[in-house]
Length: 445
Image: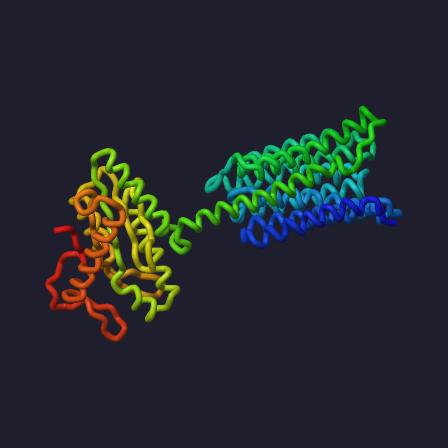
């Protein structure tokens, strides 16, 4: 028979899981999918525990399913929070821990008197994690992996000490396993989500209290047998973690939206909005220091032909390649932005001069004047560069952009007269041109 008094707990967790699924669907992050699977395991745990009062082996089966689901859900939460979870060794660690948890829980419930099976199952907690650590030590090591191995080794030692002295009562070993799982979640979330936000605080605190339940509960039962606490008190940490995770996803989504509002989605570079803000700040700093700042506008000459002849996916790869080249060739204090479809802008801050700007523009134009190998395609675009220097060419951001823009288009016209033509959808250089300076390069006269 089912214990229908637990139905409200099942419904509460199920509704929180539905709410979490709704937020996770919009988050579009792999970690949200893993968290959702973990919460489905928690729902299964509550459903199975409704049948603990069933007769005979059905009660043992319900206990096994419910406890295993609780342990597996926690293991998924813990694994999802590690930054290296996509590594093959990390996936093996998860699989081995899931197997060790399920094996030990099964032995405790179905064969608690089999001392040899308990010993073997307990030893797996110490052997499996350290095996992964030492097998991968030569090429990968991480504090969280060592922490997990040490935590489960301590669990194995504890189980080997207490399990054969329990007199058939396996509640203490099972509570030790569950405490280890959720204390591991607490440690991993502390490491990964160490930030001052409500979502991080609630989630970390929820996992700490969730782990504490498996210590505080048995202690109260042993030392204060007349003290009765409702199930809702013990389930409160689960609700805290669910709410905290929802807040974490919402916080990440807000940060991602802020990022997209200021950055180009394809290249990750600052977009025009952020570029204009940085340009204004750069000019203000130069004005206060009595120094100079330079603006370079770089337009890819034949990007449209690449899109038309090779396809947009090759065009996207080309833009990413160009953005990587620009980012690697300028200082960290400077700004590289994508301000148009095939237009990039670079702000050079102090120390800089017209000569420095000229050198940077020449070097970048030369880099773009060579063919790029993108998969099976070889493309060549060239570039037109316009340079304006503050305060010589303009005293404000808008005028500086206009000056650089005019010189860039003047350079583009020059390149069309003296260097490159398009023949049969193929970019080629005019063999009769004596032009040796970077294509379309223009600086203030």
